[in-house]
Amino acid sequence: MVVAMNTPARITVIGAGFGALSTVRELRARDRTAQITVISPRAELHYLPGIIWIPSGLRRREDLVIPLANFFARMDVTHVAADVTGLSPDGRTVETTAGPVANDALVIASGGRFLKKLPGIEHAITPCEGIAAAEQIRDRLKAMDGGTIAIGFGANPNEPSAVRGGPMFEFLFGIDAQLRREGRRDRFELVFFNPAKEPGNRLGSKAVAHLLAEMKRRGIRTHLGYKPARFEADRVVTEGGEFRADLILFMPGMTGNAWFDNTALPRSPGGLLKADAQCRVDGTTRVYVAGDSGNFPGPDWMPKQAHMADLQAAAAARNLLDELAGRKATATFRIELMCIIDALENGTFVWRTPSLNVVLPPLRVMHWAKRWFEGWYLRRYR
Image 1 (spheres, rainbow, N blue to C red):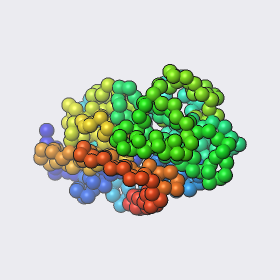
Image 2 (tube, rainbow, N blue to C red):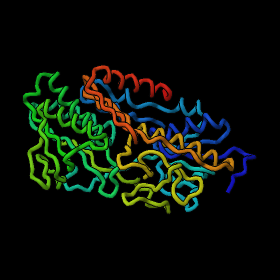
Image 3 (tube, rainbow, N blue to C red):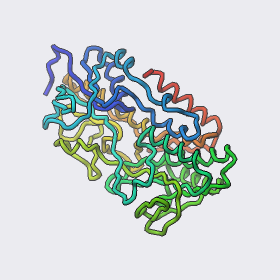
Image 4 (cartoon, one colour):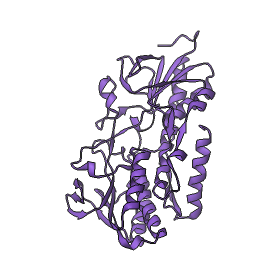
């Protein structure tokens, strides 16, 4: 079905994170007349990659919360401050707490939701839940005179790609560096735990070897190859034993947003929206997905990270506009993992594609490169 173009197309974008905002920029760069509506609880971007620096004081909340009113004005975007609650069967009406929002085309970039089913998970802090979680880590560290800090991550067994491992390595090495800087590392034991014997294997075998060697060099104890069974107020219990922990940081696997349950959209076994190589939600008309909300075809190491969301958003926007114009949607996204695993004083660069896997040893310049990228990336939204 081709939408009549005698009036500007109504395009709705759900979310205000990396995928959503990259979609807006790509849409506006290619079409100056479309009526773009963004639906999100707040007109703010929370730059979560920067929360790794909150415990050390290198970043504060106000550095990472970017008001989007100016950006939306420049992009001629209407913002609806609401939570999404459902979607009509044809995808043309988004149900929200502020009322229905009609569209001619839709991009879903509302992120993912952490699985919080592990018994006792209330005793752990989940860092990527947001800035408040990182502030809680900062305050707990400040109040501790010593003890054991346990840091780990899990996965969605039905959605192996829906995992956030990278930030946990950054919290691990960053906290180690912070405690050394403060002259009190000797009063703490750091334990890294993971159900895999080779944690971080999505980064590639070279990166895994480096990460494990770095833990050994820093005196970080490991508890690997056993699934977490439960958390208690003062300990981590796994299928392979238990150990004491005065502070637990744990990143569970991800699944789809709760509002997906109120739609007819196809889901993957792990609860994400099933998409094709063009980022179109399977079996739908002009409904696209980008970032953590989607399950996309690709290798099993394809990451859930901001860079990948940006690439998928660009493809989704191009294809959506082609569909609206009656053209065939053929754009695909580049599959690429690119990150700097920061350790507060240096960083390890990792780059993986279907044909390459590059790992550079820890370099101070990479820490500064990550900080430079943050500033460059956020300037477009300030």
